[in-house]
Image (tube, rainbow, N blue to C red; front, side):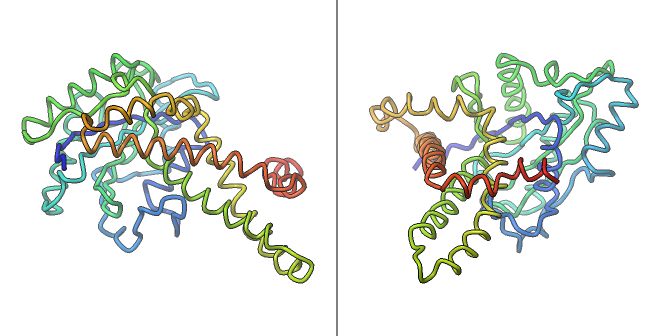
Length: 314
């Protein structure tokens, strides 16, 4: 089995309401994480900060933006999140101190390119399968402009980021190889949480459809109560999922174009790359299944639990 160890650096940009969602995930402010089964809350006490947030992400971002005198629009990117990690095998056998040193080195790399004063939080998650750090910052340039586009850049600049990150990290960790960038894969990176949410929502929807199929004159009252509980939970999560996947929709739907080619190249593919691809194809199937199964829920039930409509009526 391939044991290649990669240095991993990924960016995500956030504009408005989603800032609160990533904060809840990063800072572990929720009691349960049903949409992300990899979170083991019993181990969350092992998580640690390298930058502890002084305020809520959005509040601190607005403070920095105002202080810098920047003009903003509703669609301005206010927060950029960097995910730092490495292949799972890289962390095997490492102590918490060694893991901390790795992420401190990641911080040292970023500090050369983005002012630490703009950081909102840097938290290392030890309660998931692979240790990783979420570092969130306000995308203020050196001359005080708000410009995630200039900092993160296009595909060419993302390649430069990947190159520079690997060159920095390999000095202390010579076994690390450069991670694969979106510019080389030719598509947008789909965050792991999207895979997990798709699987979770499909399971929920299967239970809802089973309840519908099992309903008869003798158990209608009991099933109606169970359906109401299930749908009240499902629809807000589904709505959130569709909002999050909107920017990845093209990438998800385009995965099938690679499927046949991958089957022909399996013998030549590295095991880790093959597994990653198969996960992506599973997401494509889950995504399509969700949309198909959603159509099987009676329209009157869908309307009843249309959260957008309910909010407008309040």
